[in-house]
Image: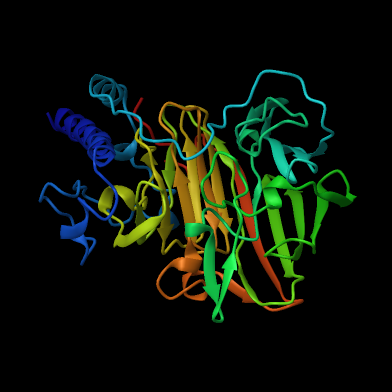
Length: 412
């Protein structure tokens, strides 16, 4: 009987997590109908109907991901329950990045070692077109592959691209710094606001490359309002991809700068994410942040959760800089480390990818209370530089528990 009760408790816990995602997906995010307003003072469990409740195991943190926790996996029964109660797709924030099955005509640089393969397209924003794990000769995609590598490839068809000199949207296309107004022009026809800077839309130059490392440079000294020089270095270090970004203000005036990366991860039915965060910005219909709230239990990601089937497109705050993506059926995990305090999570419903974007500032940081410097950005004078480093480490999850893995002692 004890075994039967344990199984029922495990199934109920899985169904609870799935139910929370469904409830959150039906909520209206924005200044009206704030679903978190009764739970703002603390992160305690709430049963008031506004915040889905969840019992968190005290030892299930990002720092202790080696713990084996069958309570957080998504079972066949929970998936059937989710199918019986579908969640309507949310709005799309940009062109869906699905790629196309066609040949390419853009030269790529391929880095490879015993563990990884990385393809980089310098002329396509210095972006990644392919990042694979090498296992016994077979290549398994970690980033969603770009299937259309050509001159007309759109940035959102890439596997990853850099975010500079800022990340995400700028409200109204303007901000104030040192008492002066700075106007930032739109940079995409399908976006009403400037987004992600212009590094992802520029052709980078190859400064040097070898089998496991490539250094790219970008000269935007004629850019307006942001005049800058940037360097992007991709390095394969065993099972780890290291992405290093550096930017230098080449303009006359001091401006707030920020950096990040925008990878598109492979997503399957049981993909899980752990990325503990203390808070998040709720957004309005234009996806600009309107209110900062403590992360509710179902959104804290302190334990590996199945990805939501609803739309998420929010900036999370109070991040430790450590995260993990787990693919249980593929027996793979990816540990992410960054010297940033924020990330943006984007989960478009029905797609085979999701985005986890480590960044050093939230969306529209320049126009939030306190200004850019109080919200993660760095004010650079002429000739001053900012650097950030992002590490992606792939590991097999098998008989032994590994960091980011869900454990291996499974009941046979």
